Each structure stands twice: as structure tokens, then as C-alpha cells.
Length: 200
Image (tube, rainbow, N blue to C red; front, side):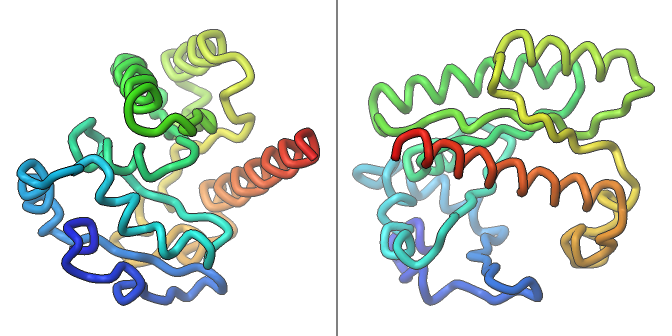
């Protein structure tokens, strides 16, 4: 209920089995929270306000958004500095990407002028599938330089991990899927360090 201002977000933080990684979990009541937000003043900025006390304490804060463009996602975009878009290598995902990019532009113009596109990560990629390869080609042509080189493949171990209550890295770190996420993290850090050096 931190997004509604009913609790301090710091009090809801939970540790994980991964060193230096904590989570601020949501729950099933988040759907109700979106309905409550509609009636609240400055509703688009509630998450930013809730997370502000945490900014100085962490190097990175990742906000996992629902696959919709409702008020909760708008709150996340207002609270964020950058947007990393996971894109499934399927036809209809391209249409969703277009809608998301338009929403990002609207939020940047009206609510969060510092918001930037971090990049796009291709997920559920199957090199044997011609459609997946075509989607990858189309996205790279549409957003040159903004598509991460790391691609997250379709992987059974990634699909199994949630049913065991574990992230992929703890469920099977040797799996191709887990290794891809480690590679993604490395690529992201390299990009950020390069950007810092460029502006130094």
C-alpha cells in the first residue's frame, strides 16, 4: 500500500537469497490499488513519491510493470529514469511496442521530462522460428542502436523457475536462460559505465 501513501515503502522491503538484492513486493491487492488511485490527486506521481526515500540507498531500482498501459504503468514511467522493454519475439508484440513507445513520449512530454528509453531486450527467442528472426530484424531496423545484443532464449528452465518459487539464477544458474540474464546484466552495466565516461 506504499503507492497509496498508507505505508512507508522502506518498511515493506524484504531480503532475498541473492547478496545485495532486496525486493519490494506487490500482491493481489494491487488491482484494487489501481482503482483507488483514480480518485487520488496527483495520482500519476504516487509511486515516485513512495520510492523517493529509497533512491540514495540503492545503485539500481527496477520496477516490474504489468503488461498493460494502465495507471500503474504510468506511475512506473513517472517514477523511472529509464525504460528497459522486454519484447517477446512474436508478431503482436510489435504492435504493443508501438503503443508503449507512444506512451513513453506522452509521459516524457507531460509528467517526467527526464524519462529515456534504456533499450529493448528480445525475449523468448527461438532461432529455429522464422517469425522470431523477422521480429528481431524489424525491431533492430526500427530502433537502431537501442536493441540489446543479449537475447533471452526460450528455455524450459526459465519457465520452471517460478513454480519452484525461485528466480532463474537460483533455480539453475547453469541453464542457458540464466546465463543469458547474467550476460544481459553485464551488458547493461557496460552501457552505463560507457555513458558515464562519455559525460565525464
